[in-house]
Image (cartoon, rainbow, N blue to C red):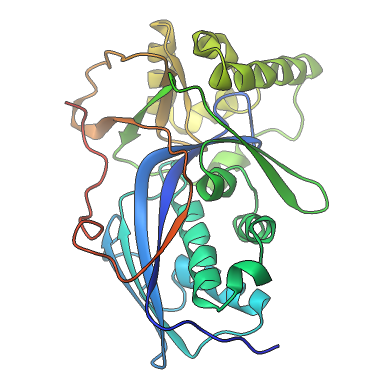
Length: 314
């Protein structure tokens, strides 16, 4: 099947995400108000990627860039790829910190390719886009909130699926981003093959409570974010993160490891007074992103090209 490409550039804004949220391991995710902006247009001169902001100077600038790889996979699913694509990325989501930077790149690539193919969103519908993005990432708990926005429950059966829920408007998110990076593969390698039945039952109850707390009763966020499935096993590999989670929870703050870490996420219904962490951490309060990946047209404007990353909260 041949495809027709649209003229001109398309662009997408994709949010950061936090997965797991404590007990919701590989199932729950939340979209956060920190975004990457990516634009792309078809050329006849191969693949070229321009990166500004997070990852500039270290990420690939050709067809091996993750956005380009996701676009290629999507074009193939749609019926054919162009000879070349120019891509410009303005990254604000920190790399390898547990805030879904790879998922944002994958979702951006999938959405850009759908937008560049005429009738692409009909040829690959939203459910198909989610399934492809999750297939490329390997799990759906970050790509689903990135694509859909809000609070998401994701699962796999014959494929990957997700449902989006509206978070309670009182919920606030504060992220504590360390200077050092983490690797999801190493964090997963720390997990045991089995867990005790009482820990699994505890996690099921807390995950169910977390759905209620995030959507209706934020006062229950502290007990709802207790976890026995993964954070304790990962703690020796990121002691500073584990110590910060313990310190915040000792103050009554619903703090968890964001994704595979090392960022810490605090979910509250009001402002918090963060501890003095020195220059090795950035602390920022983020809105909950309820829109998800947003597609537009044209190259990035001046505002989108400002690569301002998360900074210390004043």
